[in-house]
Image (cartoon, rainbow, N blue to C red; front, side, top):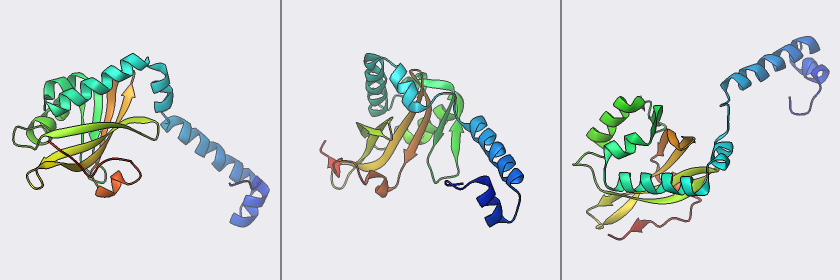
Length: 175
């Protein structure tokens, strides 16, 4: 309602203040039902710095080695992998392991390098993939982790070149 009273809003929408208050209460309830119990920033504050560093290092090592089992071992049981704006996502260890093993980390996929960064207060990575031309690791995605404790609850890949905008990340990484 952007600072307007229920009466003012009702006048603009040609309804009653009671209906505006009711709609606002329903909206608050809907938001409360959809919000996570704990924000990602609260989760990160609750994790010891050494434990968080270990999560980041384990993830980087597992991904760069294309070690599907090691990546999956870091996931919450109900973890989700998404790649907006793609309509496909993967949920749970089995589906994620199949996706990683057949596509993202398959023996035929390019090698990867990750640079840890922060995105909106969340653990993330500048994600680079090997390119034969120019024989370097080139920008591939911004990969964002959502944690539940020290487990990865969500892994989101933003694969657009524009995703790198605003981050002080190199165009490419030498081998």
